[in-house]
Length: 396
Ligand SMILES: Cc1cc2nc3c(=O)[nH]c(=O)nc-3n(C[C@H](O)[C@H](O)[C@H](O)COP(=O)(O)O)c2cc1C
Image (tube, rainbow, N blue to C red; front, top):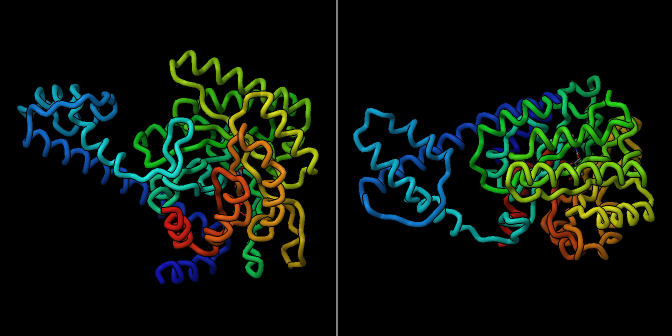
């Protein structure tokens, strides 16, 4: 009901203005959720301190939480030493871990728990970092991006079009984003995560094609500590020549560069290597898709996301001649075809299916056809958050 009213007013605005309003709302909501969460942590901690000064468990320390705790108690409170003491012995994580344990898990992947297989596709949060609100909406994981090394304003407006009859969108946003440094600074403010956060990275429009791999490497270097996985976007139709990176030679250079950087950063920071996935285009020929998958396996990549928006226009509409990528139910059959092509690789690569998922049934079909995880974007615009809850509930 509330969504129907909101949708009525949002659809009176042009699509990008509507998106802007939604982002303001979700950014405020994200802050409130995060503050509320910190507040709950502080209350729990205080309660524990009062109840049981000696309770000790063996959970690990977390410097961020310690910092929050010290800020909360301040130096004027007499129990600060006991609090710090208890924190260091791990009392704090007693409450934290209870939360984690009570969550039912659908899948554990790369050391992270996925409550169910549905995630938010790239492009919705292009670096504003509103994932607390998206997790609250019901998504199990969130893909942020596409983020480029330097900030970029994207293509001139209008660049986003609704095709209401088809419940579809055409976009030629062109990687409008605040740049990797800015995204990194905002990500720092949200250390607590209700699920995995993937970072989708790409190249700046004005970076010469021969330097493309360097842009991906730079993004990784800046964002590494904050990503649970990286997605290499080589399939957006809105950055000139980006899709050429799916060709044999440039792809080999790119995969080699990012894998070397992965190894290097993991070693330097003393952490395990991050999973890297590649997002492919539905407009590749079938044999090209197989060849890309083979190359990913050979390079030791972790997964494939199939697929990005399409340049095809399988219908007539007043906006159909607009250049840009088409998304929504019209993409469904090709996304399913691509997934079937990739089925033989599902033991070696994590397959994430995206494109045209707008019902519970379609979500389950993708998993039946071999996807490990699924994502959506356009159906959220037309059907609202209720759809996310429905799909999430269907996996309980
Ligand atoms: C407005 C808009 C912007 C998008 N921006 C990106 C992007 O920056 N990077 C990316 O990898 N995919 C982007 N996508 C593609 C989506 O992540 C997704 O692959 C595609 O929309 C198909 O899924 P859907 O039919 O559920 O929308 C964008 C899609 C839309 C509609």
